Image 1: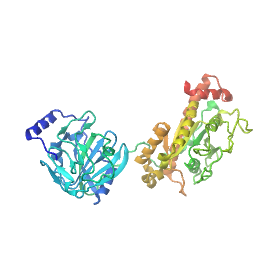
Image 2: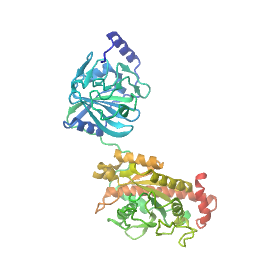
Image 3: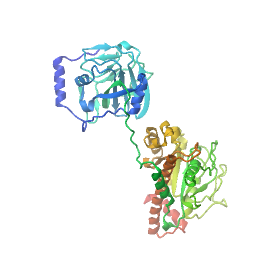
Image 4: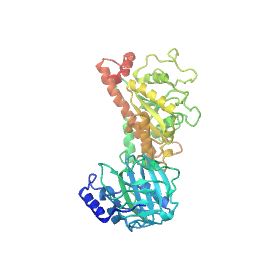
Length: 510
């Protein structure tokens, strides 16, 4: 059982703390507990809507037991929250009052410990009280203490900042008064008690005002005007005249069923003014697309826009495109509408093989298409295949991006309102995952929702799709500008494909 030091020792500790006050930058007034985590705690408490009011915060009020009790004693139900350097969030809820004492247990049948986050990932776990008579422990020289044993001791005396974090002198000895759900303390605390913050909130009945979520990617306001702006930008796009190109080609690569053909249908629908299914799509074991098809998009007048979305076979672990066929696609050796044969890949001896492709027949941007709802389940062999394709694409200097499809299936908030895509933490995490898997900057990861269940166009779905397409055209335009400069420097024309090919392959070595 814990006891306090004598009064003179406590005063000396407190006086020393006053001299050694260290504030982390400017005083922080607001708490770190998010609405999502408040919602989760509210559901665990189980007695209706709650208001969480910040009482104590160690980066603002100092990590001192006396200050904790001054601010938190006799405040009714409270929740203690610890945040560590590894991105974990955990703590305890008490429905009884904290008090100052020389050492006494406080019974609380409603108390629980919890975990909200572990190593940066949301991990919602409630550890219910098993011995209510020892749920809390009051000791004036300590901060919050939960359980007999004790399950969680936050800190004692005064703990000064160690420059960005506090090395708390508490501990977690799980399973005395709370059900540990089979977890060890290390799976909660990451094996240390170094925290960046510790907060205590009072918990009272009432409906709180939720903080509007901040977008992780900023765009102009979504409205008719913005949709018109995106549409005009795409309609007016023309490739550099110096290369003599009529359009740019964007090659779509991705696992079977991720929505390559559906993306073309979505873009085509926007410009047709109605839902279009020009490209066959659906669910099949080996995919629906079996040919290389450079799809055109036409405006209402019938005029073709200056880009082609090039569909091809979906990627599979054991079949589909291999690295050689990918190379032929990039270099323009495979003719339009060529039907792939998984048993007999195309070779240069094939009479349809294009031996001297023009610049207009080559690929100017590569788009990897990935399902946001299953991004964490991509087989490693599939990841390896895409990364091998990337090495080839990088050698040729061709820009790459990722189309993150099915965002509505990945996040319920986005399913209810597509406008939530850039405030959704779930989609942000999927963007981070895609960025890590393929090693591309986050601004090259483009979330979309294809038209799939809709019978009428939706402005917000269209805006998200056109925003992604415009970025792809920007990437292709930048690539062509660089290529044009290099061709001019070497006095190479687009009609001399052999030298153009050599130029592309050496682009990353310059």
